[in-house]
Length: 111
Length: 109
Image (cartoon, rainbow over all chains, first blue to last red):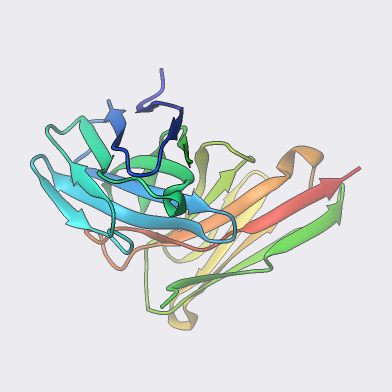
C-alpha cells in the first residue's frame, strides 16, 4: 500500500479561486515537503515541515500557504490561484537527511 | 542561486550503450541522492550516496565531496531506462533537499 498519497490527483481551478492540495503519509516520518515541478526546472521547494503544527518556507513560498495539523497530514493552500501556478505538485515525506518518499503528484491547471 | 546543476540536460542512446550523468553542487554536501521519474510519474529513489562509490544492479554512483560533484553511471542501457534522472542534495540532516533540473534519458532500440 502506497505510503504517501495525494489528493486530488488532478484539478482544474479558476483564476482567483482557492485550491487545497492534500498529502497523507503512513511512514511515521517527521519531515514533509511540498514541491512543484515545471518543465526545465526540476523540483522546486515550496514549503516544508519538521513537526506537526509548524511549517517553514522553502525557495518559492509566495502565493502558497501550508498546514501541518498532524504528523500524517500536510496541505498546500493556494488562496488566490493564478495562471502561473499551473504545474505538477509533489508531496514527500522523509525520516531526515536527503532520503525522501514521494507521492504520485497532483496535476493542477489554473484557467 | 541554483544549488544543484545537472548535465547533460538530455541524452539519447542506443540500447546497450552506457550513460554517464553528472551533478554538481554550489556547496559542500555529504547528502546526495539520485531519483528516477517516468513522464508524469512518481519519483523513485535509486541510490543514496553521501560519498565514494555505491552500486545497485546496473547503476553506479560516485560522489566526490571535495569536488562537490556526483555522477550516475548506467551500464548496458535498456529501453525501459528512459525517463528523467534527478539528483538531490541537502546541507545536513535537517536541511530540506534541493533538486537539479534533471537529465532526460531516451534509449532507442
